[in-house]
Length: 517
Image (cartoon, rainbow, N blue to C red):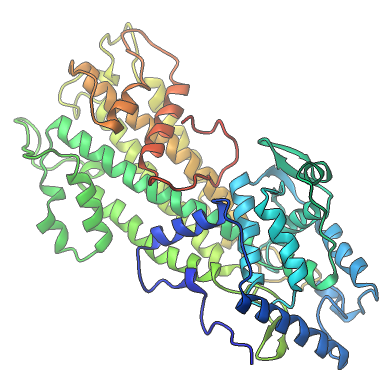
């Protein structure tokens, strides 16, 4: 008797360990170049699943996508030639458009798909799985368009583009650029995958595209929460604000674990004996005083949403599925869990960026910055300092708000009414990726202002690694300078310093020049 996992596989076990760490390990496993393997138990489950499927077919059972058509065409018989049926599925779904998903997101998407199929519920042969795993392990990554998925019968369109690339059509990544897949395969000495109806449907019928982007977004938001609290600690220290809002006793009684963690991160930047400067108000504006509450709420959301992502990463999102020696038809492909998470992550990104933008406004205002010059320029009027940086940061936050409308509120019934309730999870995830990218630019803008405080105060270049890195981003502002590149560089250096050592780097957004590291 084949024993299937009773619950989600190990990476889906959220009972122990820190959720961001678990997701980080998942990304490291997926993108660290180690590849996926079948152990004897995996092979036995996969063989059993494929055999059960073939046995049911031999008994005359109807199986979606194998003996019957796809979607609303399930009322009609499938092509007798399973290879033709599989290629037809892939070809008709290759209708995606728009910019490509990042290489990291595409590679993680494929890894998640293989990991799900390895459970044995998909009825896919071990030979097909091993072929796909070999290509993935050798660094073959499909170019996948980001637009065109309903995420309802899985992320059909982006995964079909990936399937096309594995079969030698479409495009794959080569030296950071899209290239014809057949040429990339030939250059690696690899042969294309030959799809049949069941393996093609199992590959395209999962939530892996939206899930991959959401997982990478989750990691970025954890980094952004750390970045905002780190910058807050520096600001409070330089302005001489009261340290009371970040004290352990005050934050402990709120009974929110994320708040206590965020407060501790702020305290780490306050120095050994923080005391308020004379003339500072008893209570600062909320964008300084309430950082533990806001960033902490984001951390608690990340914990909750991360558990959902981990569970999804450990599940089977196919249709049909082979379980308990039966073939079951249902809707495990529906990405509602991922869609709701993606929307929530976008809201969290706005909370952090708004904190950073409001803190930037305080630093540029003599009414709040301890009497320093407006716009932190040493020559007000003759120069404008960080005025342009603030204008751009305000625009970034406004754009984030445009992108923040929940994608799960935008379903359109389609597919002859078959797909009449769809989650639009990939739309939400890609909007969230752009939102998070913009959030880094707002945070980078604040980082420049923090460094300018030290320059105006005549402080020497800092020795601490993080602040020494950021010091290099900002040129002296005795005269006005173009600062677009400096903002990107500050964001990239800050992000790079906070990324845990040894972690594989990958972003949910495409474009190597989005942040400069």
